[in-house]
Image 1: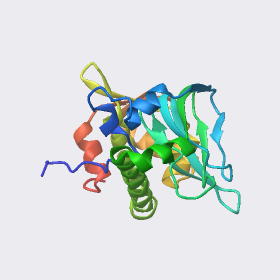
Image 2: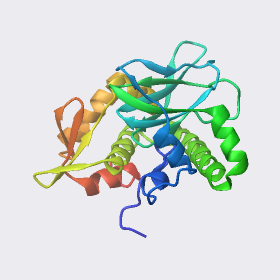
Image 3: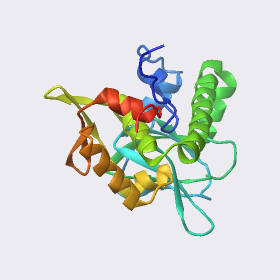
Image 4: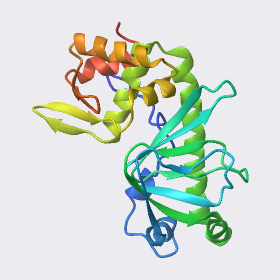
Length: 237
């Protein structure tokens, strides 16, 4: 096992990494159908769909980021995850969407009608398996969210979140990892089950410990990756 255990890869929403890393797609594959599907642009804060809307389409994010969330009966918001380029959203077994999907920045998505996806899946086992794979990853992400909000401290939760974001897509500058955060502190808090004040204080604490530096509110420089990994696993205070 590695010296520092990795944060769960299911920390975000369902992933389509297998599709992104696959060879050139055939015309009949899921990737092939999605690559030919209509492309639509969504502005920041614009909803792709809302809870209760008919589940008519399967979406793949081409650029940007999307926040997936539910509004609780008391009006509080629970963020379920974030989707990034290459991710599928709109999966499910019910006739209606069970959560909301809102672009956090200007985004582009491919849109494949569910009726077409279902017809293809009935005759193409590989296509159907890819949908099953994505749905299984989404379920695993939901299980990980229970751990994140119930068993970790604020420091551990934020460290695990940043670690997952770093592994999603990192850049390097002056020997340090740079993480882009296409979401607000409120979004992060609603995902981790923390108040925005707690999120801000925890960012400040990580900065004081010289584990991270904040170039701007949407960008984090990781100064000590080992320490961040330790925090994510509850191995350091």
